[in-house]
Amino acid sequence: MRERPFHAGGRASRRRFRRGESGRRYNRRPTWFFGCPPVKKLIALAVASIVLTACSSAEKEQQKERTFLLSQQSLDTAQRNATIACRDAAQCDAAWKLTKTYVEQNSKERLTRADDAAIETDVPSGSGKPVFSATRIASGNGATISLFAQCKGMFGDERARGSDFDDCATKIIAVQNGFAPYLRAHMPAQ
Image 1 (cartoon, rainbow, N blue to C red):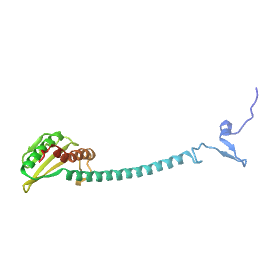
Image 2 (image 1 turned 135 degrees about the horizontal axis):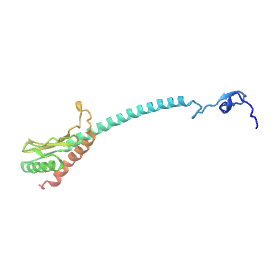
Image 3 (image 1 turned 90 degrees about the vertical axis):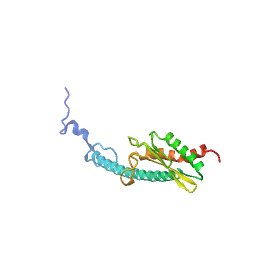
Image 4 (image 1 turned 90 degrees about the horizontal axis):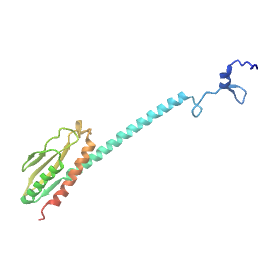
């Protein structure tokens, strides 16, 4: 049987220690990149990801705020578009009758009031569903008819963005922007 030479460090130490160009032995530990130990790299990566997440969250909040402001402006514009003027009693009566039909077609809730001054739908039990109302305000021989809408859960405290704002704003803007064209398309020509 052949004898092996004795090595003080054993096999593991022979693998772990290498000799550099200067002839000195050094410990070659595994590294991932850039020659840094893995723990330092993990800490650096964790800090970098936290910083990026914080930046991303701030950017997302800013984007949400911009979207909220644009939606608010679109809602204001839609409200102005949902106001029409009629010039005499006959035209106003026809427009008011069409307004009632339009509210009934676009609301999932039943009407709770429909008289010569206002049309209102029932308040929905859940959030995210629009509530519609219309008013008819006399002005000389004619009147001004306005369609209003809002959702339960659309706004929070002090008109802050509510949980259902985006979905509600989309529904309301579409209905209010379609109001005047609907009346024009269905009014008898005079």
